[in-house]
Length: 174
Image 1 (spheres, rainbow, N blue to C red):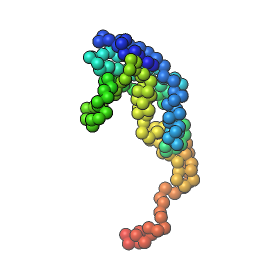
Image 2 (image 1 turned 45 degrees about the horizontal axis):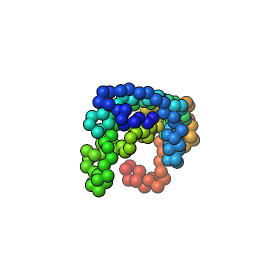
Image 3 (image 1 turned 90 degrees about the vertical axis):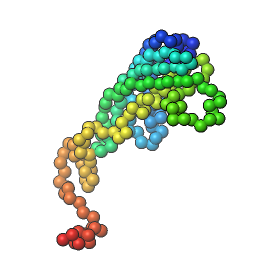
C-alpha cells in the first residue's frame, strides 16, 4: 500500500489493506528450509499521522500460517497476529556520510512523495514468526532409532542409549 506523503496530516487517519503473501512465501522459500508458509492474503489495519517531517505508522496484521514442526516434522496450522509501529524520517543525503547512532537504527527513512508500507509490513510479518516451529510445546518428536512419531505411538525402542566408545568411562564409574 502506497500513501502519498502530502496526504499524511497531523491528525491521525486510518486505512485497511490486504497484503498478498506471494512475495513473503518466496522470501521464506529462498532460505532453503521451508518451515513456514502464509496461507492466503493477510488483512492489515494501519493508522498514521505526521509530526513535523516524521511519519508515524501504527497497526496490526492477522493471518494464517502453516508450519512444519522441528521435532515431529508434521505440518500444523496456526494464526499469526502482531501489532507493529514504524517511524519514518525524511532521507537526508548527508546522513550517509555519518555513522548511524543507536537511536537512528530505530527509525526508517523515506524518500520522495510517497511511502510504500508493503515492504515494512512484510518484514514485520516475517519477524513475527516463531524462531523454532513447534506444533505444540510438549511435542515429543520422532524416535531417533526407528523414526516413529512419539506423539501418535509408543515405539519399542530402548530409551537408554549408550555409545560404545564411552564404555571405558562407564567402567571407571563402577
